[in-house]
Amino acid sequence: MPVSQAGVVLGRAISDMINSVLELAILVAAGLAVGWSWHNGPLNALAAIGLLLLLRFSLIWVGIFAGLKLTPEAAGASWMLLLPLTMVANTFVSPSQMPGWMAVPAEWNPLSATVAACRRLFGNKGWVGDSWASEHAMLLAVAWPVAITLVFLPLSARAYRRLSR
Image (cartoon, rainbow, N blue to C red; front, side, top):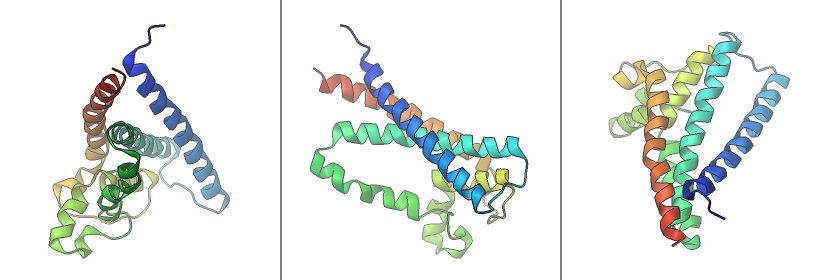
């Protein structure tokens, strides 16, 4: 039976997104249960959740591509490539408190943009910088995931097509 080559990887991405939505719903419910709240209204909170899911969707495509291209041994070690993405970000420390060589990548990190935009949408205090990246975090929180998806979705579909030959 003929099946679209992109359908298999798209199905994988959709199933991962369903899991991500459920996990985020549990996380938000647990946060609300212990007293967390947003301060800018429910529409801004939904926008922040949407930004989190958009970043997740783009990173799913990176994972699918890596899974199709790497051997199982290399895939086990590939988590080290995500370390800079997760650790060199404004998640825990303001880039202004980082050394200069680390502050610039931290400000332009896709995770940093999403974190800063979500903080603003939830109405939580965050670190304010004077760089273009920190002033336009909302724009970058959308642009980074869209760019990542535009690169890795076709690469994943192509890698799957080549795998199935």
